[in-house]
Length: 613
Image (cartoon, rainbow, N blue to C red; front, side, top):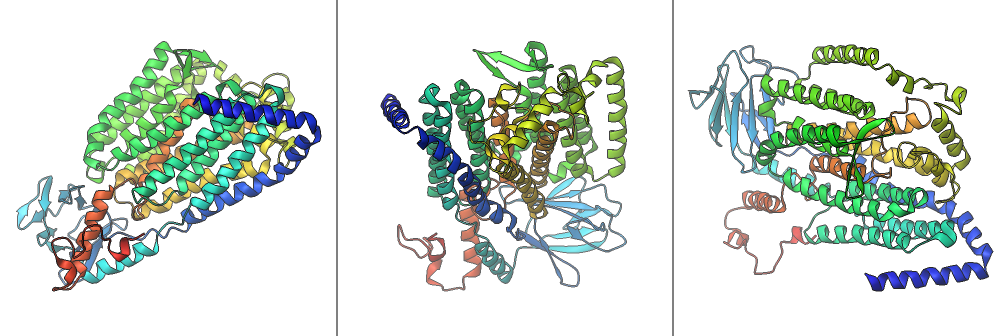
């Protein structure tokens, strides 16, 4: 490390000497590179966004139910509702079958279980009454309300069709985007060094070099393990690059800390993804995660100190942490549930209690921006768990009543929003931050003034709550809108992928995480330009702040888990993928095929033709 530092310092000295001899060179570079950055940003994101939006999300067939007339009904999820309701995964239009009669679920070890959902007609497996749940095997007869169904595996033709579609859905190669992003990072680093002038230190090039190395090491390690589909990570690395640039402009001393947060966030992304592979393990961890969410907020309330009007910061070893950011990950983990648990009122009641405790603690901390984010996330999870608009309307009414009570006893909260909608009438008081943000954003134009060349960083919270204005000023409106579009694309992908999600846990967690990031982005962007009250929340991945960065990467793991493309998802391990492929291949190969040997017909080290990729 010391050798690298010395080399970088030598390069900085040489660059300073060159600029001293050619003072106009830096000006020409800064003027030209402003028009290059939007083009590079477009090239970086184009392939990733197009690939995410073009994913067809082919249903994965895991089994089938044969009707009395012999017609098959495919099971395209690990968890399937069977009933007469139009929203049921297995729709059976028989009067004796309830709207939500039963659920058939597959576990990670490929075992199936049938659950009776308090049906009126009863549920039988091979003639035996199912009280709550019962295991089912291929060939068993399931009787629902007197209607017999035969539980069967996929046919050979169905398996061949699914495998063919899976191969056609192979994600686009992302390494070109990584190359463009590497060039973007190099040019950004050079621009920041020029903007810092004689105050430039080796921390700036060292940090950007570390980010580039981290990005390529991650890519190489996962490609060696046969993983594909790096669109989400490309978006996250691009936004993290903007975060480092914003930090270098506003708080250069915090640059190493922010890079460490990116590395920790990537580590959290991988660890959480590994845990999400085992649904039984996630169920066991839900109570721990619920306790973690309450504990993080409770400790902050007791030990935290006030910053920008909210008691949501803890100082440890000279570093400030915001535990409420990490509590978001725990809250979504605890709120999501697999299908067989969704129909237990006790679980929904406990989730409502958890939400009330979290929002209550945030209210006592005066962190009402984060409380609003938790409440919107709660509405998304509660709807996905119950599908009951009437219940949600009642909850919203109670929330409005509670907000009125809070404002009555804490009227100073209302004064925070006194300038909302007319900030220009309070330029020097309550509208100070918004008016400066809008002025800086307007001065940036389409291509910006150049990284490190703005003045908004002198305004308090410019690199956190007002970061959208700072990006507009230094990077231009084009890149700022691309950053917002990146978050929206992640949400669109999550919503589309949920239609073929393997488990309701992945579906609920992905939709909740995407909704949280979108709502938080809206509060940050619209609050900075006075379209919404300034609530003091960060822009995911972009704002300066270690806790917020780790939280954003952790939330991304929920979206990654819902990706059902072959070798692209956290939801199933590589070992299980290979076993599923081998089983599918054995079923599709005719008897007597030379590949039917104990080693699959291949010599040691030989790879089947369709796995050479």
